[in-house]
Image (cartoon, rainbow, N blue to C red; front, side, top):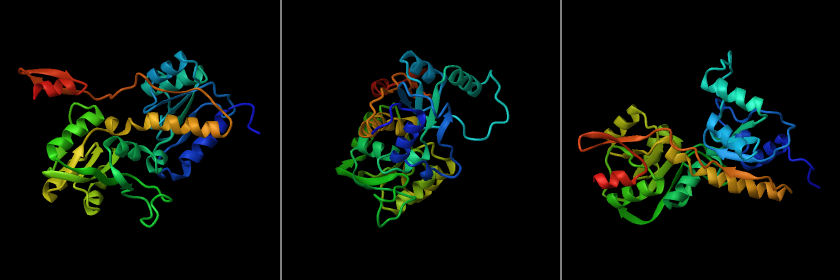
Length: 293
């Protein structure tokens, strides 16, 4: 029989069955950041980043639990000044009994995690992990990133148009040589700059990630391999609705049907500015950039 109360502890157990916390990297911080493990969950709001605005959004819907990809706390805290962004978030969460939970690199590593959601968005087929898995059994040993094939080869122009549309972003940064025809694509949602050489060695023609390091961009230039920096947020945002659906099903399977919502307001904190008629202009979403071309 299911428990009568759906507590934070029960939610953590379900999340652990979805994306085991033990799969997180040693440097990471996952699980319950703030909150009472015995508290009853009135509802869950899912977003990418733990922010004051996300807490306000949860409170406006009477949801007392927030689940994010990025953890609020990375390192041990020596002080918590109340006038800093972190201090304000902690104060508001504690004052309103809002629990904050993070699934970070454990969600990156899971088979249907962050990079899988991005691969699905881009229409990749027959995908396998790029790193951190056993090649003989990738489904049983999930890892970081994905490599797969497009349904059919496309021109570089078609590929870039599809990429911009799929990510709903006004632009991307490209290092190295963009192939005339593209069929095999590797990617890693978020900050996956260090997997660029792995992507090339596994046969990718293009590698997509966020926050590409300058040294990696130089390497791509010298190696004549195409690395695309599509931004951190645009390459990770698709996991939010995916995680919501997975969590709804997992909760239902254990006899619970809590309200689970995805943020309607959290967006990319980085905005593009383009030059138009010799004047800087904010460009978001992608339509304004198309008009400039």
